[in-house]
Length: 408
Image (cartoon, one colour):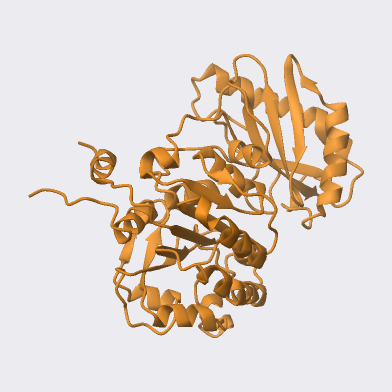
């Protein structure tokens, strides 16, 4: 019997209410220029402190495996209880679904960033200064009007937030994944997409389509500033994944602002609750929808955004803004509450990292680690220890008394 089969056999539907709050990229590392504090440690968090004092268990989570730096897709799938190695999903699929765009069988979708290129074609800014969404929409309209097909394959281009957009290829004989054209750092040229499986003819076709798409699209952006180029990531087709409700016997909903995270939740069958923009509005919507769902995933982006910018003060303030809104959510007192990140985004690294993210778990049965605050340092001493993120949902279920006894 597999472990998933054992969990399924033991699961009892109880009607318990759960909330998973994800502060994207929450984890950080202390470095001397920062005064040996992380943003979570430097932030003033009276409401989190009060929650910790009421009794919580803390720990650290490995998003994929030791030493592996995860993207947002694997990081969130693990939080949803899906092994990110077994369930590999391209970022393009996730972003496309999050924009509310339906993918057909055989479609290949890629997430793209507008970027800045110098005269030699070297990437000088992978996000083109985080251009305004309105600029992204204008540029996507230009590309869409001029590049409708590559050979016999249809091309669809959809704008996202700020510098982000998606490209969908629709035609015969297509399959992902292929490698990214994003070099993942400045100072390098746009990379060439290649099939992940060199023997896969369908992947080879997609790689050539992307190369031909670049030939058609890049000249259209040549005179634009700062967004005179673009990078592509996560080109793949949509896989079959069992739904969250099937796995956990809970009716789930997602409250997220950015398309990426709406897409991730939709991929596992969560109901997207549209509308809220600020974290306070997200928590207010949670209160309004509380009776309609058993499980809520609430996503907060700005900790990750500040970490990627290397802005310690902004990440600290993002945590403080979250803390200020937290009493709204706590007004409903979910049976089980988890607060964590999908990965770490240290300011010193200006990007995702492999460092285990801190996690807080609160329920009537979580016990108390008798710590004063929720921080990386405190989490290192917590009773949850260091564990794989894919087990967080199972711990939440256990704290809701959703598992029958195993064995005699």
